[in-house]
Image 1: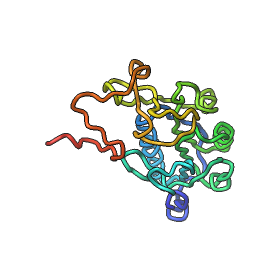
Image 2: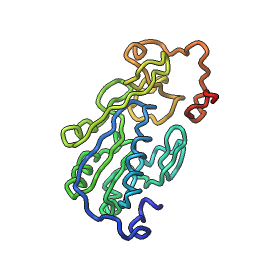
Image 3: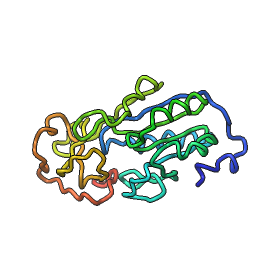
Amino acid sequence: MDCLNIPMILPNSPRKIRGQIQVIFGPMFSGKSTELMRRVRRFQIAQYCCLVIKYAKDTRYSDKGMSTHDRNTMDAVPATCLRDVRPVALEACVIGIDEGQFFPDIVEFSEEMANLGKTVIVAALDGTFQRKPFGSILNLVPLAESVVKLNAVCMQCFKEAAYTKRLGTEKEVEVIGGADKYHAVCRACYGGAPHTMTGKQVDHYAPRRLLTSLHI
C-alpha cells in the first residue's frame, strides 16, 4: 500500500507538521469520501506520509481499499476500532478516516493524533436515518480546526439534500448499504413516501458517473 510506505519511496517526506482535525460531514451521496480522497492526495503529492483508515465492516465495493459510490478507490487499512491501527498511525503525518461515525473511539483517537502533530481528516455522517446524532461523532466539532457539511441532491425531487432517509424497515442504526437501502433527501421529502421523478430511471446497483448524460 503506497499510502503506508511513502517514506520509503519518498525519503524527503516531511516528518512533522502542525496537528489539526478536519471534519467533513454530510448525508449519504454528498461526496464526503471523494473530498477525503482529494485532501489526502494533496498531501501525498507534497510527499507527506499518509494513512487512510476504512471501516472494516463496509465491504460494499472493496474488502481492503476505500471506495466512493462511483468506484474511485484509494488504498486503506480496514479497522473496527482505531486503537487497533494506532502503531501504524504513529508512523504517518496525515491520517484520513472514512465512515468516521462507525468508530467508537473516533474522538479520543483524533484528538490524540492531532496533539501529536498529525493532520486528521475525518469523513462521516453527522446524523442517522432518524436525523439524530450518529454515535459520538458530533463531539469532534469543538475539537476540530475545520468543519464542513456537504449537501447531496435529493433523490426524490432534485433539490438540496441534507438528510439520509432509510428505505427499509430496519430499526438498528448501523445498517450498511447504498442506494438500495438509503436515499439522500431534502427536508420536505424526508417526511414523505419514497417516489421517483417522472423520466428518472433509477438503477440502485449501478455506479454513479459524472457527465454521462452530456453529449459534447
